[in-house]
Image (tube, helix red, strand yellow):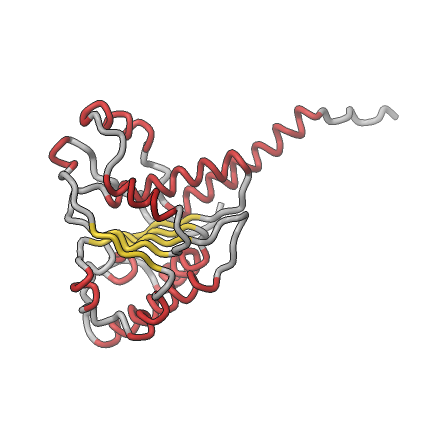
Length: 237
């Protein structure tokens, strides 16, 4: 009987690459950014404005050099903080892809969990679980949802306490500390007035967070598109 043809090194490498691509696509799907063409949008942005970086991008870049695990990025609407945070995740994906790092990513908007949403309780729990353990996480439009009653306020309070607890206790992954960006339109005084942020939350966040309020031009007026995340996708590939 003839033996099986030996598998070449090239075939093994091709197979391993396919497995990595599947994993990479799943990470993109979980984070819900896979339908947005960041590179083309950014090229168009540079052609129109002749400015390569927004103020929000500079703030994130500076924060990444610090030891802080949480960035509260505050600015008026239209100044590019949501896009900058999403681009931050996108660039980290590319690094993870090139170096085969086991980082995980998640992006969601506060209203998806606590707003008038059609998500089931099971879907909410899955989002919370994926988000809390993500190496890199963005919570967009933080502070925009007004709790409808004491029950929802209590749920939001527990969620944010838990979220910060996880940021504190998660260990380094592939040489980097877990990071979280909260984008918001609110100034710090308004954030402190949010009824669901408890003393426990403020105690936990001390020492690991940086608050930055920025001002910049309204990039929508220059034709820069809104960043629109794709739909929430529950289920694994």
